[in-house]
Amino acid sequence: ADETQHQVTLTNGFYLGKYEVTQTQYETVITGNMNGLNPKPSQWLNNNDRPVEKVSWNDAQIFLARLNKMEQTAGRLPTGWKYVLPTESQWEYACRAGTTTVFSWGNSAASSQANFKGTHPYGGGASGPNLQETTDVGQYAPNPWGFFDMHGNVWEWVYDWAANYPAGAQTDPEGPASGTSRGRRGGSWNFEGTYLRSAKRLKVSPN
Image 1 (cartoon, one colour):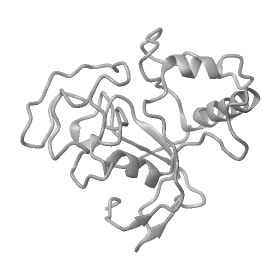
Image 2: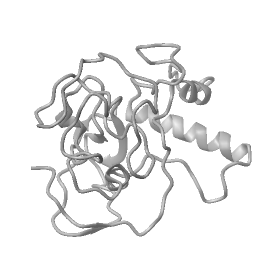
Image 3: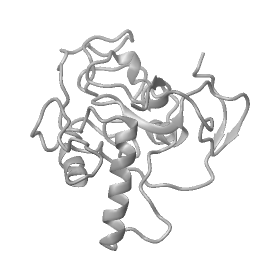
Image 4: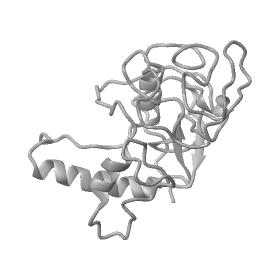
């Protein structure tokens, strides 16, 4: 019910990180924060190139604020630019990478294509073993636009408050002005293949 197809127009270009944020990147930015955040929150510590997990939406905002300040101070972030979470529409646009299939690679999922939990309900493609943990970023083939792990490994936060899509075509949608849950996309290592679908939406407390 919350995946109603609709036309979306994005009028502004944007850059997106080609990998999920790694443990090392998160630790580098969060170390020394005054908010009491653990710079090493991951379940599988000291795996520098694995994606950081156990990070709430609110934690991500602190990470982004600190990252923006660090990069501006270092002169690496042009005036008027900032790091933000992608909107849900931006995320799906980047995930699909011009495709209309269930996943960016086709209509079935196999263990050789993404890190997800064991079996899947789609035909075509053997189900693989349940890895039961994250893997280093970039271990699976990228989507057609060069983005890695858009399907699987860890869930990815988006900017929007979670809600059913509004009716009709939308331009630069950013979700409702308020809510109780934020969106996250892409599935993860401990969810079945259905959750990896490009269209799949999950609503989670920002805490």
